[in-house]
Image 1: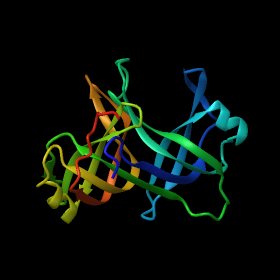
Image 2: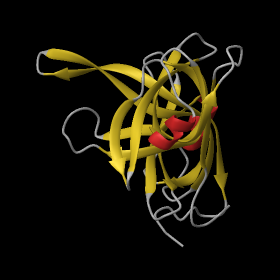
Image 3: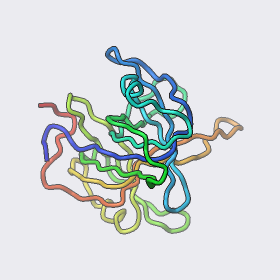
Length: 213
């Protein structure tokens, strides 16, 4: 395990829901937001925001309705606009290409980082065990992404015993979840994003989240 940055790698295959929309400019490069729908085996679906550069779009144009395969990492940033979620998560795309129509949907994510909050273990109203984790995953150049993660059942019970500062490796998916937020007398539909961890491994070597080489 590299002590100065951690692993953050995902592969996402699904169908594009809309044409790319301009998001922002950074260091002279324009970035666009693309919404990708990925079907789960259960019949549910995840609608994920991809962040794609203009250069990537020029090399591999993206159109609504087409099948797309993307590789990248899940990133977080604080939303200070006062509108929507305070923590915004997106897939920062490193590579993309058109996917074959018969290629199955894919939502696979591997994370390696440091547990930065005390795990919250609880039971749902139906009695299912769940643990909420927050993982800090370093980037290469001095920043870290803080990613909310959930796990279930036996994995949730094991995670309840973890400590802040533990180095972890997670495998799972990046998922979307709809919910209603009460604003006064009104309820507004919102979408939350989180990592659903299928497996969690505690590593012996610390991850040094937030440090740089």
